[in-house]
Image (cartoon, rainbow, N blue to C red; front, side, top):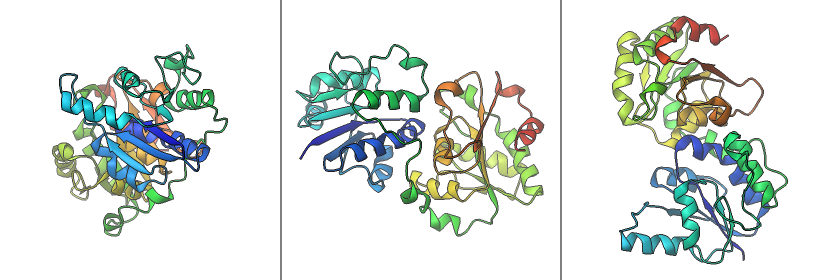
Length: 305
């Protein structure tokens, strides 16, 4: 039996963008034993998916952590082929720990190496599709079957008043420029509630303070920040009328499960390289401004159509 390792470490948006690649690898190697090397936050999501036989967790040891590096070497050895979908400096460095496995990724000269000089100009999905084409996969699906994900979170969806709209006010803490102000989300929530939609705020526990600001402007808003797993979000987003939020992981998940999305981008990131990809035409709309502080609630409302 062929043994395959797939490397995809973080973050949530990047992980979700790899769903079609995961599906393509599984379809291309139907009889292989496929292991995913990822980070702890994505274990549950990966275990619930149909693409992997084993999950290994990368604790990202420092080079001076001899015990950790020994375990990492063990995790990377014994495979016939490795697909590095992370293609970061760190994951590319893992190649020297992998023994004789065929390597699909960057930083090498093997027959599977992705050496396209335009790769850094490609959207994540396009880049991975091109990488897997070099590895012999002519067909990488535009979307993956996510029936296993859209049925999750029923303990929450059963309690939500339909129709509801998902709000995602958070983003990476170290990139505040990606965030539209919570006060503006509060104004937007009040507008949506007045039209008969229940605003549902999602995010991690770190976003609970943002949800409190939104609820102060819109008491009808439901705060689920810090209460859900990533798996739960799949079903919650699948049942929403629309998801509105910053360029952050849950918006990628919402797009992947088919939810209509309005994604707010600032100059902090380029939607041409990282925008969430939906399941159908015009499902995902991007609203981009240079500075989030200049984005008005009226403009967001107008963009809802």
